[in-house]
Length: 327
Ligand SMILES: O=C(O)CCC(=O)C(=O)O
Picture 1 (cartoon, rainbow, N blue to C red):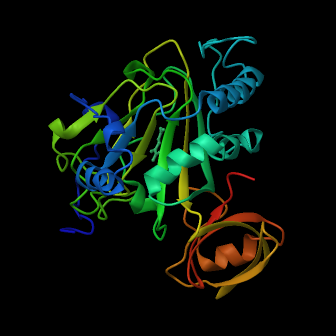
Picture 2: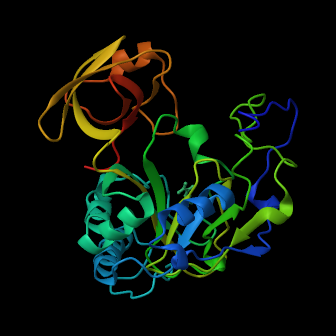
């Protein structure tokens, strides 16, 4: 890896408005069944796009469940078959709402979908209880350019998966990826908090997008710069992004806190086992808010017994302690 991160004091951040995805993402269905070739594509281009591989039966249920949330919040009309926006403002910030709890698990753990996830991982797959559910109306939230690995250290043997639940043509604001830009380390600017990717470091002509449809899966390399595009349609963007991990060698577990100490955390994982992990300055703690790092003092003071969290671990070391987004 050439660079670990960059430092450009005074640099302007790259924004979604600076991105014009002139290229088209390529689909990788022809590489299914040849995991080495699939990974070569992923390692070189920074993504895997599979078309129409997710069970439609599971997607139909998922869409119904997400539509029920959207009707409750006035985003779409009752009985809507397309996510046409009512015009009612949406406050946002509900990507990890407990109202969605279980939807992603039911989708990912559908037997047909687990087979697809196993093809992506190259081994049997299990869901990771970190999920964002997006129901973005036109003109709503946009995800700025970033690389996932910069914000999620320590997760190994896993893959992030991004799933359109309803049609997500480019005007609905799907993801754009800077193709082939996953082998230069992190572009995030350490010199300027909050460490956005600066303008001018990613070739403008590397950005690609496509029209996404239910059944497609986009997998992102942790070093691949990506961003969502503005939604200029009359429909809401309905997508899920989650992660899948090795079933045999999981590195992420869902657990309830038994004791939070400055140098360790004792938890009971959902399989009933009690486990102890070391906590130190290298532990990335974000239990209160998924996007804000906490100090050890703050975590000890605020993490109550019984709190459900996600532990990302390496042996007995807690790499990340995160708010659980999925029960
Ligand atoms: O869907 C989005 O807006 C962002 C998704 C994303 O950045 C991801 O899946 O890593």
